[in-house]
Image (cartoon, rainbow, N blue to C red; front, side):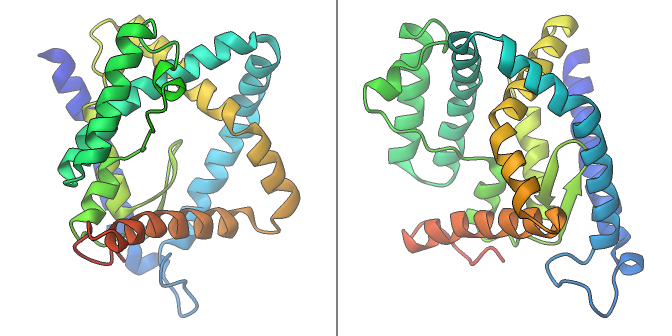
Length: 244
C-alpha cells in the first residue's frame, strides 16, 4: 500500500510539473514564439539543466559502462528492459484496438520470459516475432488527443503536454518502479538509465557535430517523429483525429 502511494506521488509530481509549465505559458511567450513551442524560454532553461547533468554524470557513466561491460552483458540488459516494455506495448496496442500488434507484443513477452531466461535472451526476434513499441502518449493521440505545447521535462527530456500526461501513466504501471524493495528498484532504475544513455552515445555525438542549435534540432525531430507515429495510425484507419 505504501509503495502504491509513493508511486502515485511520483506520478502526481511529474504531472504537476508539466501543468505548472503550461500555466506559465503566458509569461513565456512572445511575438516570435514557435507555435508548437510557446514555452521555449522555460524549455531552454530545463534543456540546459538536462545537458549539464548529462555532461557531468550520465554521459561519462554511460561511456564507462559501454567500454568496460562485456557486449553479451550489455545485450542481455537491453533485452531484459525491452522485454518489460513489450508487455506495456501489448497493453497499449489493445487500448488502441490493434489486435495484431497486441498479440505480437504479448507473444514476444511470453516467449522471452519463459524461454529467454526472464528476457535476457531475445528468442522472439530470432523467431521472427516483430516488436512494436507503444506508449500511453501514442494511445492518447490515437483517440484524438492533441499534442499540446512542447515540453522539456527535467531528466526525461523532450515531451509534450499529451506525452507528459502519458508518461505519468507509463511510470505508474512500470514493473520496476512498482518493486517493493527500494535498493532493487533503485538499482534497476539506474541500470536502465545508464543502458538507455549508452545506446544513444553515437547519436548524441552526431548531434553535437551536426546541429548548430541542438535544442531546436531535438525539438523538431521529436515533434515530427511523434506526429508521424500518429499519422501512421490514422493512415491505417486506426486514429480518430490528427493529434496535432
